[in-house]
Amino acid sequence: MRIYSSKSFFAAVLCAVFSTSATGAQQQNNEKLDEAVDLIRQALSSSSVPGMVIGISDRDRLQRVIVHGYADLKTKRPVTAETGFAIGSISKSMTAIALLQLMEENRYDPTLPASDFLPWFSVKSSYGDVTGHHLLTHTASLPDDNLCTDSPAGTYQLRKYELPYAPGTHHWYSNVGYQALGFTLEAIEKAPYNSIIERRILTPLGMNASHGRIDNTQRGQIAESYDPSPADDSLVEAPWVEYSAGDGSVVSTVGDLSTYARFILNRGAGPDGRLISDTAFSLFTTPLFEGYAYGIEIRQTQQGVVYEHTGAIAGYRANLEAHMDEGYSIVTLRNGPIEPELGQWILDTIQAAHHNLPLKAPPVKPEKISASHYAGTYRNAAGQVLQFEDISGKLTLKSHNKSVELKRIASAIFRGPSDHPGNSAYIFGQASEDAQSDVTDVAYGTEWYVKDGSNLTATPAPSELVPYAGHYETYGCSPDPLRIFIRNGKLAGHIDGEMTALVPLGNGLFRPAEPAFNPERIQFNTITGDKAFALKAADVPAYRVETP
Image (cartoon, rainbow, N blue to C red; front, top):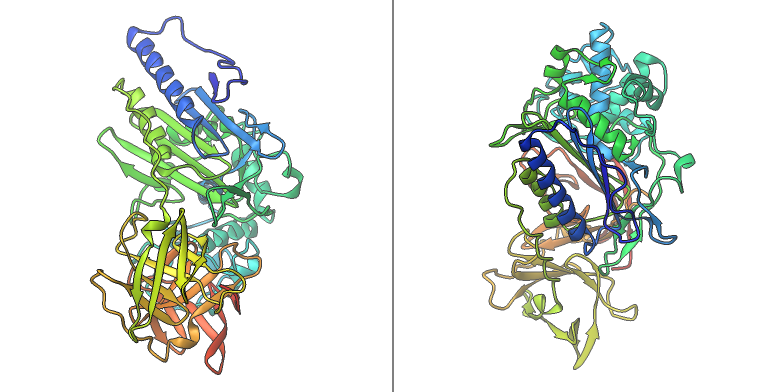
C-alpha cells in the first residue's frame, strides 16, 4: 500500500508494496496509478475541502491511500489514514446484509409484512402491507425522514401517515424506512443496532477501527465536520450529533471501509470466509427501480457493473464504488464539501488509470456568482418596482434615492440590514436549476416581482396562499430554515437548500410538485388572522419567526 499526502509536510510515501513478479502490464498499471495519485494530490492542494482521504483497492488488498488536509481546522490536526469519519448512508448496505444473514438463518423474510418482525410498525394503507422488501428497496411509499431523529419515535409516528400510493410502485429514498429496518434487527436480535452490526459485519471483516454508532466517546477523536457558510465561501463547524439508527450511524476509516469494499468486490466473501451466501448476495444486488437494490445502488457502465453508495450526515460525506468486472474499488471520506466537478474528476481519473488511459487535467474552479447576476429592475403585478445594483461587488437595493447593501443568507437569497423595513428575504428565481442560469424574478414577502426582459408576467398573490408565506424554524432539527413564498401565483418553498414548487392538497396540506407521486407533505396549521404560525414537514414542527 502507498499512502500519499497533499501537504508538503506529510511523508510523500509511507509504504510501498509491489509484487516482484509483476508483469509488464501490471507494472505499467502501477505507474499510471502513481501518476493519477500525484495528479489528484496536486488538485486537492488547491481545493476547498477541509479534509479528505481516498482508498483504492483491488480484490485482495488496499493499493493506494491519499490523505489531504485537516481533521480539525482549529487545531490543525491533520487527516491521516487512521482518521475516523461517519459514513452516513453507506451504513444502509450493512443493515441490509445483517437482515440477509437473518434470512439465511430462517429468522427473517423480506417478503412478509414489516410488522411481522417489528410489531409496533404501522402505517395507514388502503393498498396492502408494507414488506421488508419494500423498505429495503425504498419502494414503501414512505417519506424521506420522519421527526428528523434517530429515535424509534419517528418510525412509531408513521402510524399517522397515510400511504399516497401502493408500495412497490415507485422509488422514493426513505431514511425512516431504513430506521425501521434497524429497529427490526433490534427486535429480532434483542440487542442494540450498533452491537449487531459490529458482531455480524465489522468484527468478522476485521474492521476493528469502525463503530456501529456515532457517540460522544468519539468526539475529538474522529474528524470534526464542516458545512459551507450560507453567507460566503467559508466553512463553519457542523453540529455534532449522536446517532444510532440503521439508516446511517457507522463510523469508519479509509482502511476499514476499503476492507468492506473488497467484501463487496468478492461478492460477500471476507478474509475469513463468506458473510452471506452467493444467493443472498445476488438478492442484495438485484435492483428494482432506479438501480437501487438492498441498500446498494447498481450502475452499468461501458466497462462493466458498479455497486456503489454515497453517504452524508452532519457535515461528513462518503462514497464507495466497487467496480465488479474491473476488480477495483474506490472509497472516499470527507469532513466537508468539495467542488462537485473535482469530486467526479477524482473518480474518473482513478478509472482512467486502471485502463491505462491518458489522464485529464483537473477541472477549473467554477466562477463565483457575482452580485451583477441579480442586478436589474423587477416589477410586480401592481407596477411597484425593485431596483437592484452591483456596487463594488455588493448587491444593493436602490430605495428612496439610497442604496441599501444586502447580505446573502443562502444561495440566491438575500436580506437587508436590521433596520431595513419589512421582515422578508429577497428570494431570487432562475430560469433553471443551474446556479449560473439567468435570474428571472424575485419574491419578497407575499409579492412577486418579474425582471424586466424576462419572459414572465407578474401575477398577484392568490389571497388563499398569503397566510402561508414566511420564515419558519425547526429549532434543532435542521440548520436550514424553511422559507415559504409565492411565485407565479403558486406556493413555493426553499426547503433543505432547494427551491421547490408546492401543490395544494386541501386544508392547508401541500406536497412538492415533482415528481407527481412525491410522498413528502407540508401541513400548515395554527392560522390566525392572515398568518399561519406553524407548519409540519416530515411531521417535524416548524414555527414562524418574524425575521428574514
